[in-house]
Image (cartoon, rainbow, N blue to C red):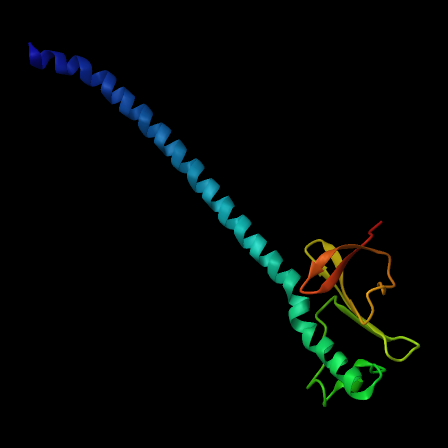
Length: 157
């Protein structure tokens, strides 16, 4: 009698196990998809941080050379070419789509330096000047700072 009841209970148990198997497979698919999305978001975030940090990393030596030239000569360099080779071995070549601007003011001591480049889908201007009141000549909004560079985003129409 005992063995006869096992068959009766075995059918619903198998049905429940098959259902649980489908549920577990569904949960596994969701976990794998969520994990893949999380890894992709981390990758894109790190890539974006690398893009944002590249200009300060590439051009900080140029700023240091401008300051050293100004301290040594008492006036700002008339162009970036004046920095080589004494203060800077070579001026970094701009990357594709990147524009570098340097301007010495009429008082000969103040200057502005800007690098405009694409970051993600935006056009950013990394800006440095010898005076805090100076701003880029283009129509932009300041969106923050990175490593003491003031960051401006172009107004796109």
